[in-house]
Amino acid sequence: MLDEMERHLLKHDADVVTAPSGDRSLSYRNLVYGALLLLVGVGGLIAAVVASTGLGPVGIIIGVVAFLAMLGGAMLAFTPVRRTADSLAPEDAKPRAARPRDASFMDRMNDRWDRRQDEH
Image (cartoon, rainbow, N blue to C red; front, side):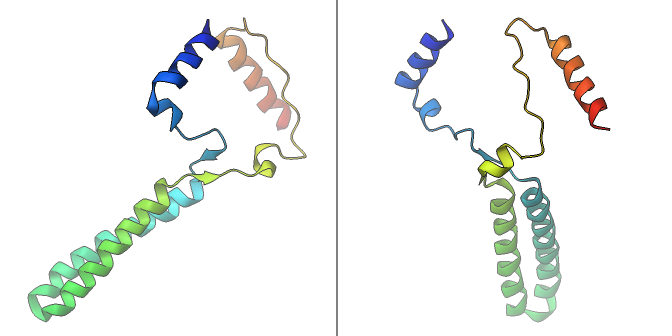
């Protein structure tokens, strides 16, 4: 039943077809750097407003550079990166046991807790 629904969605829904695949995800490092660059851009815009009252065209240049920094920070933060095969399956990681389809949510959470406890 689920396979049939998925085939129907892929045939008739353009959004599902253009959705990003599973090998792309947001990078935590890029999110942090992007957020910092965004904050620098906001600070630059504030500096541009202050500078425009006394320096004129210099404030406009600072404002444009600050806006570009904000735009670059947002793009860096929210652009998905392609995960490599190494990041998908590290060599030292234990292979996951196949979980049964009828496992309840609490059973899966208990299994995750046990795996975490075994790591420490």
